[in-house]
Amino acid sequence: MCQKENTVASYKNIVVLTGAGVSAESGVATFRENGGLWEQHRVEDVATPEAFARDPDMVQSFYNMRRAQLASVGPNAAHSALGLLEKKFDGHVTVVTQNVDNLHERGGSSTVIHMHGELTKVRCSYCRNVFEWQGDCTQASRCPGCFNQPALRPHIVWFGEMPFEMDRIESLLRACDLFISIGTSGSVYPAAGFVSLVRSIGHAHTIEVNLEPSDGASYFAETRHGKAGSLVPLLVDELLV
Image 1: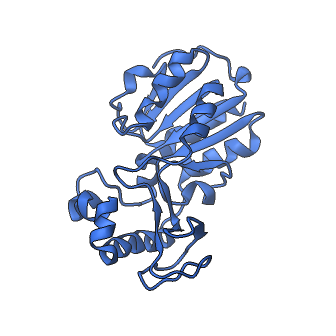
Image 2: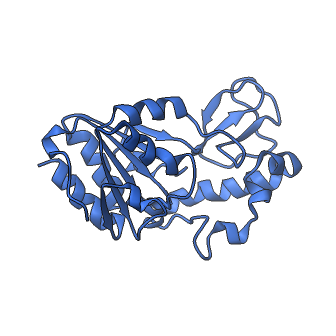
């Protein structure tokens, strides 16, 4: 573990990047692990615009099942600790997540950027509006805004599509003085490049919290390896001293 370059008291703008490892501890099925969702469904069948054009019923069914799963899981200690950090920290905390679940919000975080979209939202292909959506969405579902049918698709960033709010994320990364990456593989871009951007600016401390060293672990000034549910509350306690 490397030594910190900043003092805790000097941090004013914290950006936290979270990945599948955080949600996995709550029991959310992930794509990349053994037995994960990619072994049950091919990427080409459920997570591309071409798949939706070819078989929208199957794609809708896949995301309906994932949306329904949210009712059976809850935020874990890492989610709750980040919610507490936002509430108690004397500065700004933004969570940028690659996860499409709502566990950060349920854990108490309110400033959350879902760069890969959200399971609890759908988007209209006609009017382009985004709507909260809790139940199943099918090709028979009408858009609540323009009433077209079929019109709605999952509000999810599929392979080949641009992640959401990248300009805002880059601005936050450039302004932060502490960047924390939690539960990410370090292999999925553009998120995997965030630590390099922060390092290139040179005024922020960087911390990786991951079950094991990520592909980008060497880019971080400080690494803490183990379960997020154990390590994140300890880190938050340090930041709130």
